[in-house]
Image (cartoon, rainbow, N blue to C red; front, side, top):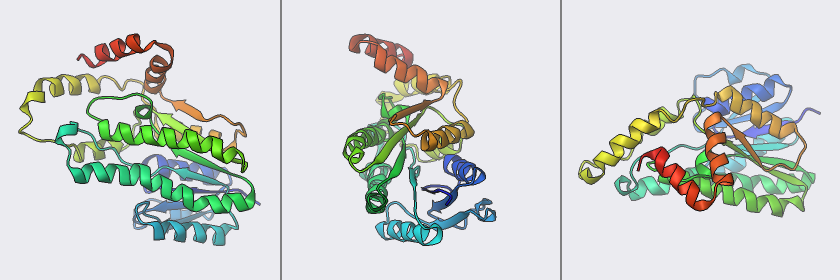
Length: 272
């Protein structure tokens, strides 16, 4: 029997490319998204089942998992991909923006994970792959909400990794830096701005100019999808997988430099 993967957030970007990659390698794919009217071609694949799943709506999570099991017999791998980035000065963000960032990126991931665990325990195996970010390992200005949500995913996944070893269930983290998708366009559209916070203008202008140059060597969605696929099939107990030259550099600095040297390095990088 072919293996089956359930992927959240497959309407575009990394989720869409990953769904196609698994299907083209013979997997059954439960491709979930908030709006199944999305104009992509996933419905054209015989081994892809497209269904509605909003990770902020628990009833759609249970429904999608049950539909996937009914369609393909079982689910072997869960890929928690659905997320978005809330960028901007923290002081400029609203309570609604703060709560929405965590509702989607953190609580949504937790809800989907918790919903699939009984199925994995019944099968005495399974793999959970959480799409994190280099921003989940290093703090960056202007992305405090997104970064903190991914820090939460890192801590959640690492803790869960040890718990689920007892159930023969693997947990893996994918840590991209910048990725050439519409993610940053969406982040720009949601960018938190408050014209009354003029005290930050000098810092903001300098950082944004620097930020534009910090993404040389960013990963393509195909590179991220390939790493996700390899993580699903490599049969190792590896927890973290880094992709992208920028992510490799930043995380390398975080893990090799002493604290004082690392902070000095990042302050210089950000020109603060």
